[in-house]
Length: 266
Figure 1 (cartoon, rainbow, N blue to C red):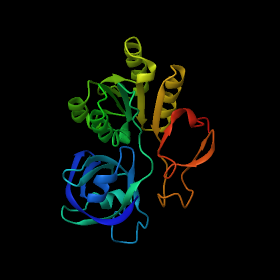
Figure 2: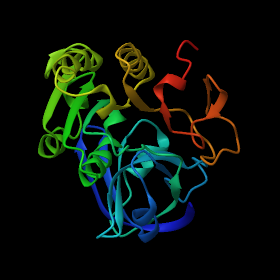
Figure 3: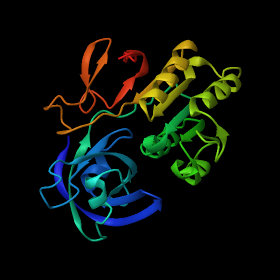
């Protein structure tokens, strides 16, 4: 159940050019949030910008009663947010949406993140490990070396990390979805399809490619969809996507969906 509250800033640091990590105190969010869910954050006390910004929950600490957000400065709202100081309070609504699900049969997980899509995958790794998923792979893509995020964290937490950049400045040159093909070639010879799950978050084109590969190999795949949001609670209908069951709201029905349910052509 989401609530609206004032959350005190515990930490706020720039981790790369244009990218920031923000840690907020909240007993409610830390106790109830699941990987893949998000919060709506008001970036300033001013009325411009008026709307809250939806940000994926990056990490969850029940012990510290806090949660972290990872965001990119892309407009006026996030520019104002980047200026917020430790000790200040932000208006937050959450946790919102439906997150990733973990089946007890899962033994191997392959995480595919593109750009800011890695943000919710760190908390997913933490939860997968707590659920005794034995092997976790992380495939991280970005336009350039500077847009590869959380690489050190993934290297600490997962069995293997594969990097890919569009310009070849770090890791393999090309799309991260191509790395998924090579990873599956190795894994499907030693694990069953029923015990392997793919989790993906990133640009729509990347998710479409991952979904196609998953379907071809008859694998379960969960994708976290991105969309422009206003209310974040399913009221304004501004974030609908087309699925085989009709139009669904990313904020309320998602943001995590079974990749087989999305109609990717539209």
